[in-house]
Image (cartoon, rainbow, N blue to C red):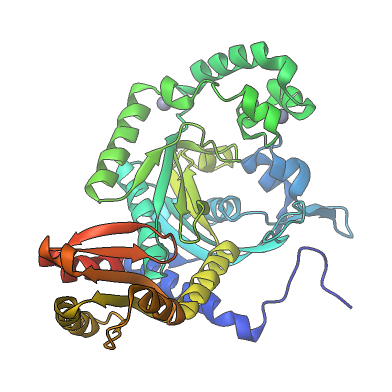
Length: 418
Ligand SMILES: [Zn+2]
Ligand SMILES: [Zn+2]
């Protein structure tokens, strides 16, 4: 017997990173005032069709939907937000206190095309805030995500943000979009054409290359924001700036679900070289009302747990492969003496630094650095020392920079603690 395609066991020898993430996330959520909620794995199909939108990839192609023995249409949850909103309404949580913060961690199910690193049972870490319209919670959630990923050792983090507007500004955008699509009709796929009448915004999600090309200059929601949406987005941006977070305004970020309004974002990391998304979120100010509750602003995010663990595994592997942080190549007596004292200061700061005292040649020392699998090499030559500089070479990327020897140690500490 074998697992079903797209499903997998997470074996005991692989579990430690999962537990580490759960522990860090739970800890952080609690310090931000979130409480855990546990929702069922099975819900009425209608819940997802109404919230995610009938004309979306998830609902049209990816949900595990079936009839039970009595003929009720049921679906294995493809995401958490809809269920949490249902729960908020069902238990009239808004009556006692409309402001609620929830988190949940657990499996989701989508029958996606099988490919490497994609699972049909996948895990998400999810957080939602109900009852707050302020743009400060948008930047707060982005901050929280960034903080979590930093604590888990991810580097090169940036937030890609966009504003999708609200029911007030959407009609003007939709009109502009429809006019544009009308001109590009001949280059679009069947799926896009079908969606034109039902849900034109979804066309911007099409993964087909020709469609993407044809839609490259499509109108953007950002150019059609009403006054309130525009000032909301401005506050998000200035707050992120003040928080010192790297962010990129990305007009093409639309996210695959119908219920989003205003701020939408994705967190990307370059921890493994190429950019890849590890989390996404957005505001959905209309969904609670749409599903039968009172008008309640809401916002949330989901972290792709499987992807996150995969990235952390690869970071760990890299770390193991690299046994030392820095190897000092000292050429000449002065360089040897300087290098020796730098190495002591760096060792003291917890940076794994090695050097060679045998007075060997550049070539021999670089070989030694390779053998020790140094991440960086510091090259100190007499002529450069006279100019008060040394060369730092990144052994992964082969990039070199000149550093002034006056501030060398603090600069290096900064590089290694990043
Ligand atoms: Zn608006
Ligand atoms: Zn298409």
